[in-house]
Figure 1 (spheres, helix red, strand yellow):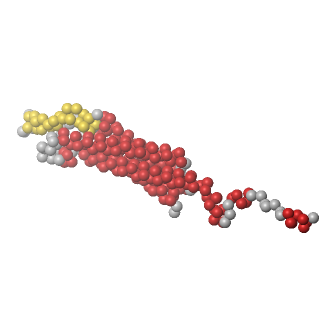
Figure 2 (figure 1 turned 90 degrees about the horizontal axis):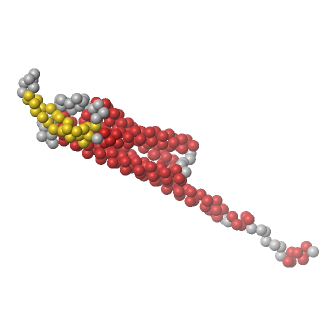
Figure 3 (figure 1 turned 90 degrees about the vertical axis):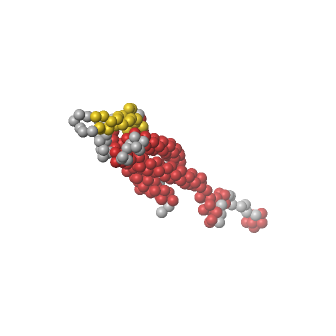
Length: 242
């Protein structure tokens, strides 16, 4: 298998994995947004308050959300996941088409692929950091800075007495967080593979005009020999002919 086919096959595999990882970001974020009624749990602030209710014996502690997180924090992560799915599906199809047709991108198209991959790599890395920090902030709010008798993962099994469904928030956000970091790693891999394909295309573009000349040199003559005129006959030959 030639180098370009190996690179194409590797790039196609990475695109297929990025589609799966992107879906594992989009689906949990969509489920969490539906359970929280369109509110974003990332970077939300609040406190615990204890109240005495007449119908219940003893005091009841419940979480009070002072301010929900900015919607852009959740939307940005979802956007990166959606773009990864669409781009991975389109580029995966192109790689399969190139494998079947036994050709590759042009030099300019390869350069644009490298540029786009690097840009989205930084976007996905930023979205991963935002999602991780936002989840830590929400967990600190839920566990009251780790003073509650339960962890953040266990808090989804305890009643928080909010007007949203919190029965699976940690599983959804944690899955989206891990998947988004995988998306970032895959974009890094795509950037490296795209650069290798660009370098390979550039090398072939440089060496292509030299191949016929090298072939003729290996055969023992240069291209100028075949185009040079035949040497003139000597004067003695002319006299004999006369």
